[in-house]
Image (tube, rainbow, N blue to C red; front, top):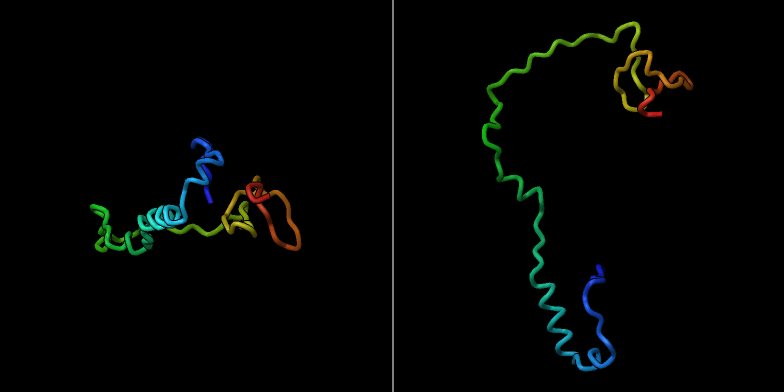
Length: 98
């Protein structure tokens, strides 16, 4: 439970003045304003302007891994040999994942 350290503290007189009914009413008031909403449901109906890419075609030229490159065994990205940190059991690890 979150504590507001800036709120004034109650002394024993203030605490004894609160009745059980008042405390129950305050507790139910605080929880009545809380609304549980699923973020996925809320985002489902929201559409970005100009986001319709159904008619677009993606043209990417794929270049195979070169002789001076390696695939990191941790992040699976292709790096230049200069970024090789170490090799253990045939698995090459880049300096970023080290």
